[in-house]
Length: 584
Image (cartoon, rainbow, N blue to C red; front, side, top):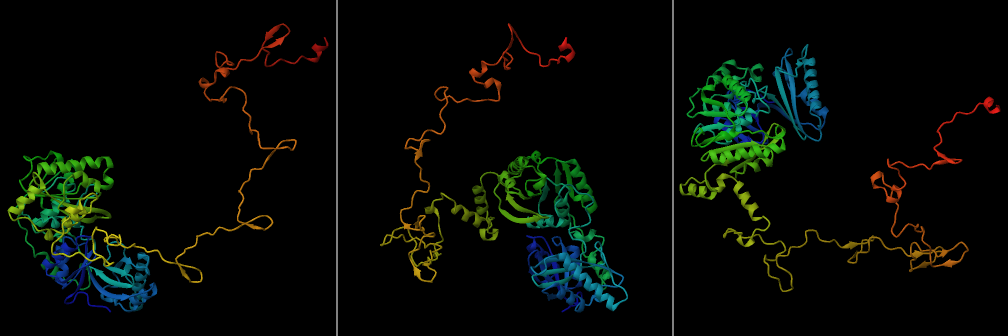
């Protein structure tokens, strides 16, 4: 069933990164969206054409905005083709001289290849225009006039129009980048998660290409992130309203931020790249950049007494394992000693780095930086011990209840109680909470019952099933898995006395006489008790008896040959005498 896609109020979908769905919901609520429903890496909402344009221009944590136009079920590729070819009026979205493309996302056992789905959808569009027009639109992989999105979950197919075109994380202000830059959408989401609202100073001591700094400045100055884009995909739609888009682009006023934003990096080239991006965004007057390693900050050199720190230190393939501990250890030491009174947020991958920081986090969340699984941790930095700091906040009435701070502290407390060696007597339970009774009906406890059974003994998780023979008869006597077969001799007689498997035959000498005294198989050669001739490859390790046969140069001495009374070594080659000489 097709629906009108931009008339009145219609359904829309905003796609985002995993972990940022709740932040995107707040953004949509601020824009005036209705019927907001978060999902997995997406948020569904309703609105009109003005809201569609505003969502593309103002949303900071959205990757793209889709407009669903049809939803149906298909159990194979032929049903998919037939529905797209017969039940969708492609003339409402395309002209014969335009171009189009399909993006497909498949989560199904029926459709196992996303490109095959795109091919079948393309065939349906081409065949539709062959039947209803003289020509068909072209397929353009890059920069098409209209981009469609096909999402398949099991057998449910959703066809939607992509109103954004290129991903919304491509703001348009990045002119250069360093190694492994963080996504603009993820950076904006982290800043919102950290509570950045221009109420304090912000510092990124490892700014890299300046993504955190630029996004923070745009948020503080109320500058829409989509203002730098050249175009959106909805500008090529048949029902595009240029006047309405111009009104949306003029519905914002830049304000002067209240606090300065600071960025530093140990690499001068990174600072140059960050400065170029910041100037392209037009927020250079709000940001102060300098070349400085993180361990150079002190209490005297920090920008303010309180503030917010966000950083994306190197991790993953950019770091060798032996360098992780040194870098992250320096980060933790600097945060603790130079930034007491501040709040810090770090995104990184791998437990080793966070362990090296050595600080206890107050917030923890799993995120993805591209395809790399990461973790975002928030720290409250203070001087002294944590218990004293919490007591000061409690006395001042600024301590947030555990229920409002999330489940992290409760999880840590449960983990602490379950640790091996933890005294069970110290485990306290709520007085108004009754313990769930045991499924066996017996009360919990440690004192033995009257029959000697302990009351806290639980039944075995897997009870031993009774044995049943081949006829189905139940018995408690389980036979041996392999019965021992009775022994039969060569004549077939059955006997319980099984002979030794290999009987030792009696010894008979050469004369045929039988004897129990079997001679040794190998008689010991003379040469002394325990003497064993050993031949070594090294001449220095040869036996003394063998060494005596060698000469001074460790070579074998040849016995001289006797020729009458003379002893001489024969020549290796003597010429044969000719017959003529022998006759003479």
